[in-house]
Length: 201
Image (cartoon, rainbow, N blue to C red; front, top):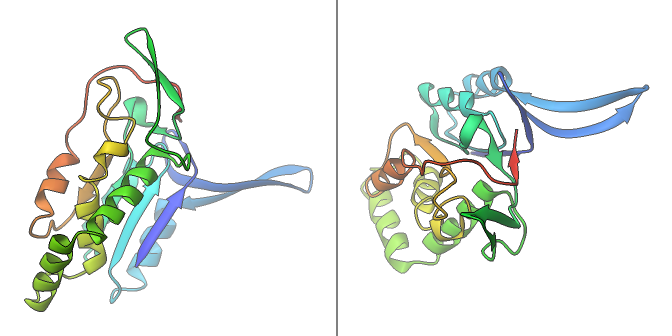
């Protein structure tokens, strides 16, 4: 089961703010906490979970991979624990560079996974490999495998990579599947430098 969350985050707290509104003269906010997700996962031991969380300060959720039925957790990483929303442009080495890779204006990690997943599903070689691994009983989850594979081919549309000043998005995989190991390795790579406009946190 894929759990996808996007929104705001809190420095020093493992929670994702997914909505806000007014009520009873107070600002209400709906938070999804790490402890709540851990409770959900533990209450369904027979279900495999994959989590994609596109919000700042959510690296704490990667601890969920310690649970036996969590196969993948993906969170963004930027300087200071932040994340990148849609970046229309960035000032790089004194030059304003326009983002031409995200026409839907999605958050950067979401855009990377969506594009990469489309590429993987559209590849006959990838699909054949997936079918072979499933037939051999080597995959606990086809979805986890596809998400792990999507990280690398999604790189070309990730405006936070390739510019030399932003850190790459990160994905942590508890049990990398065959041919998904390179996606896990990509999760540990990043470019040094300072942040840019559009960083949330």
